[in-house]
Image (cartoon, rainbow, N blue to C red; front, side, top):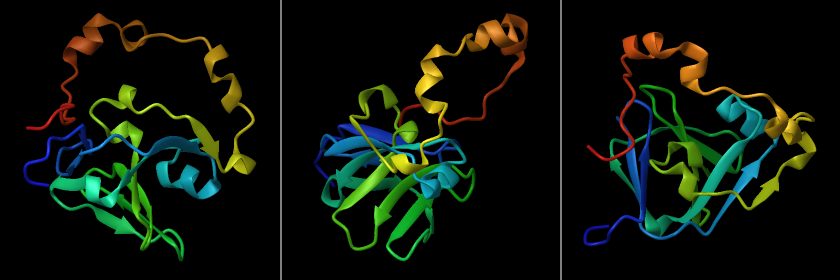
Length: 154
């Protein structure tokens, strides 16, 4: 990818794995299927689909798990961050949107695997919420030292 400017970048929580995307994602969606729920240990996964030729691992190489006969998932072996899903031999890499440095720029526009959607997912916006500061308090936050890689290339 020499000479191309990254449109989006991202990586794992510890910084051992970094990636660059050189074109806007083809599409961004949510998957509620049980396999994706287990892959991220959450209610759904959010994935940005990019063409292989518009993508590169720029630091380190992820570990992989063949989650089915047709798919493989990449993750950081050091910190466990789920990074991607891809059909073996397919033209696209689907990157977890939470692993982007700017996840706000990769907004889902559709959902799949809805047969496994958990019934409470639709009411998330109705839950009462608090900021991290409100929950922990300023003194507690001041004592926390993050070991998470910053949201930019280093």
